Structures are given as C-alpha cells and as structure tokens.
Image 1 (spheres, rainbow, N blue to C red):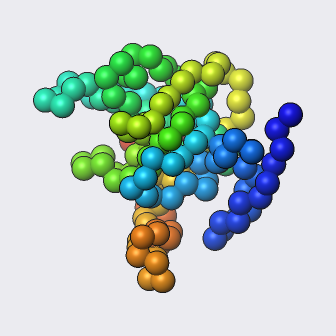
Image 2: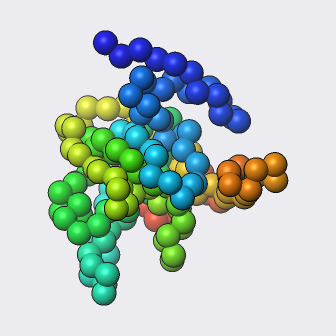
Length: 158
C-alpha cells in the first residue's frame, strides 16, 4: 500500500508517494540528480550520432504536465512511444542547444514499467517554462513565465 504526503509548491499542492516519486509539474531546474518520477513517452525524435555518442529527445508526460526527455546511447533504442518509464535519481537542467531536459544523467536510471496504461496531459510542458534564480535563494529557481503552452519540438497535431 502506498501512503501519500503533500508537497507544497508555489503554484499548487501535489501528492507525492512515500517513495518520493514526484509529479512532473513539481520539478524545477537543479544541478542535482534527485528526481524520482514516472511518465509515459508520447513521441521520440532521432538525433544524429555526434562525437559524444547517440542521443535523442522524447516528449513525456504524466497526469500533471509534460516534459522533454533526453535519452543517451542504448536508451534511444530501449524506449518507444507508449512506454511507461520510471526514472530514479534524474536531473532536470539546461542542455546546450536543447533547452530544459529531464534525463537520467550519470547517476540516474530509467526503467520500463509497462505500456499504454497511464493517464496524462500534454500541457503545461515544464521544458517550455522560463526559470530565473530565486532572489531570496540563488541556488533555487522560480517560474518567470511560459514560453509556450505546448512542446515546440513536438507540436500538437492540427
């Protein structure tokens, strides 16, 4: 049985399980691998292999928000649209030329949990939010505005 506690954020109160899996709506940019969450992959784009290896960007969502996910190496082949994924010790930060991305990083781990059986929303997309350092605590970020309500990498179908 999972018990729930409440996590107070600036904009809302979100339930968090006792395993500290946070909803995507509650994540903020940080230089720490401390995000434990689950989501469904909605779409995936291929990026050409670079000097640092193969990577791709995916659109993922849960019942509260959507986010852009960066997949590296074998992760690009391991996950497809419709997969439900658990992320442990993930990081949400700026990646050069790609914007804000959620990824496993060196210390995190992504694991497939199932397929096609989770409720989700495509807006807001937390990767499309502009974040600024908190004037009261420069190590934290606060929302400054919304760049786009939906993903600009994976635009909604007409």
